Length: 159
Image (tube, rainbow, N blue to C red):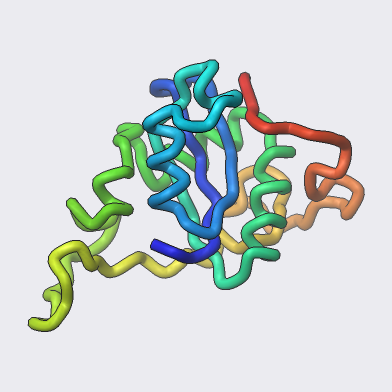
């Protein structure tokens, strides 16, 4: 799954959250799960992939990551629970072991590999633009001063 993506990891349901961005989701989540890179997720046991969103460009993925890091905890929890209400580990989904959540099973063409799967297109509410509150509820854009993570290094969000 080599494509720009934003993701949220959790230590457990309603536990410590980490928001990240990557160009290779499977490789990066494997690194978090195995604890091969020292940092926030290793120190806090944050290994469960609970949400992710693929993007067309790295620029849009980075913008979305920065916006999500500015959201309050309740908005982040609602974002996770909208797609993954049981806080299942989505690792089997991104590796192709199971079909994506909230998707209709689709037959694979005979020549496709067994690990291939159809990814849901992003719903309109998952646009990389930042919105106040839950984007599915509100369409009021954030003031440009509130977008992004301009203020400093923020590796993870512990709330």
